Amino acid sequence: MAQQAMPVRGARLGRLIGTETSAVSGVVLLLPGGEEVSVRRPSPLAAAAVRTLGRKLVRAGREHGLVAHVVHYRGRGWNGPDALLARDATWAADEVVRRYGDVPVCLAGLDMGGRAALHAGGHAAVNSVLALAPWLPEDDMAVPPEPVKQLSGRRVLIVHGTNDERTDPELSFRFAERVKKANRDTCRFEVHSDGHGLHQHRGEVAALAADFVLGALFGRVFSRPLADAFAAPPPIGLRMPLASGFGRSLRQ
Image (cartoon, rainbow, N blue to C red; front, side):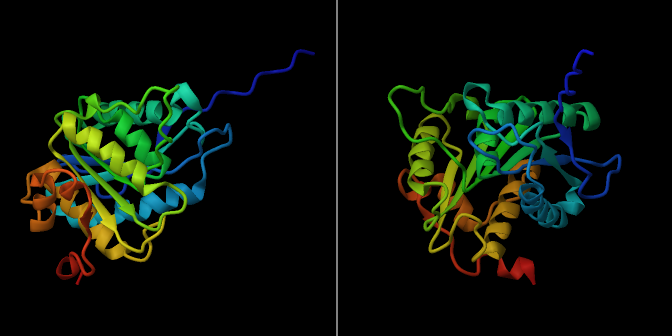
């Protein structure tokens, strides 16, 4: 008896975060972390981490018609040149266009999801990319550097904890330097003393993310720290410290 092949899993969008109405005006696609090489199913814990951020963003942008979806990858591995997580992020942007029409999209990724967001940022529907503690490969002369030209014309914000022991904050700084040369609308914030999950200053990080998303998707005026970070030349605008208490008045 011939052995049947296992069905190939496809990427999908998670349950809507927010209220779907005819007035949906912007979408955040939440990209969970993953692994460098793996054929395992995506991690539910990774999806939960970005879903929490998505709820906070939608709460802040509800009056503007903001909704969000977690992207459920076909698997958890980047898997070298296949760049599967980035391909799934691109599929998700296509799916947003199919469901909601011509609305702006922000790709918001954590860890390996940050790398996926940066890679897929060239999609025509995407106008902004938020990369939190992004996993980026070590510089290697034998491997082509991470692409940056696809981010031209997008707003790009990278946030990284200085005590991150899982993803190297210095690599995201060097990557941001390269992006800034191709796209002046790029900035990076450092969360001093915080680790990979950015848990110690989660309120400030969520407030910064909401400030960025609402400004990028709906044209709301950025806060002074964020506007200054975009305007400042390197390295100032790429090592901007996230102040303790940032956005506190918005969270009360």
